[in-house]
Length: 82
Image (cartoon, rainbow, N blue to C red; front, side, top):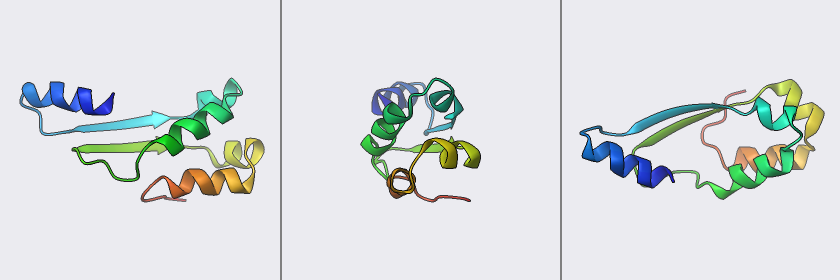
């Protein structure tokens, strides 16, 4: 999906894409498993011009996820700011 969007933007003369995502809705609607599946399905570094920031609330992480799940998500992000 991201690659297709980048290709469309390139045709319009854009050099890349920057996105910011607030993941709090996953916790609000109890979709933690889906969040982990999505986050771990993404590559750490894309081979196309995409900059993405995933915004997490520390309280949500500690309340809804086990330490191993948090580590798994962090392993698929670079860099991680705490």
